[in-house]
Image 1 (spheres, chains in turn green, yellow):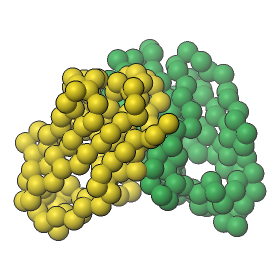
Image 2: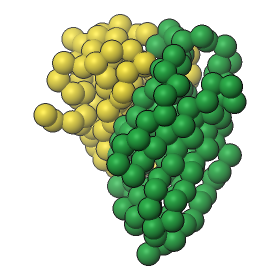
Image 3: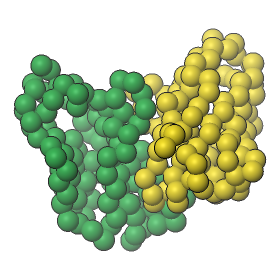
Length: 114
Length: 114
């Protein structure tokens, strides 16, 4: 069975603090893909990153960084020096090797306080 | 490049009525998805089309929900008859490949069933 768990329901941080959003996944597939999406208050989901199961290299994009660890089945997302515009709901998602199923976690609501 | 278009943006109906949502994906995207997002939850995949064929509809409540994608371009999702628990945002997304590829989401249709 495929499953994505985001244990943090809501997080509040003060602007300029760093924050890490956790994502733990379950899959029996050997090939799979992990994603992060951002859903700002406007509601439209925005793609942030995709990772395949064979690439455990961490990635950094500006203030965003992702840590993928197969050993712990985790794909965590860190925002450095958070800004008010980062306030949104962030979803982690998983796609299996058939590419025919897509599973979202329940999301983490991040509020950045100015 | 135009994004994923959806209409209407909002719809209020009474239970047992019918409703239809329309989606026009990004030009050239072969894969189209319909999701249901209940307030406070992650999106749940209802149906996935590859061109005009259904790839997966395992989570579509087929006794009341139907979807079609004629000519492999735009798509319609219908609910008939609606129940109170169908109140949700219905999201359409498209991608250039399978669910292993990044998806681009439309603004969604917020349905309220009273």
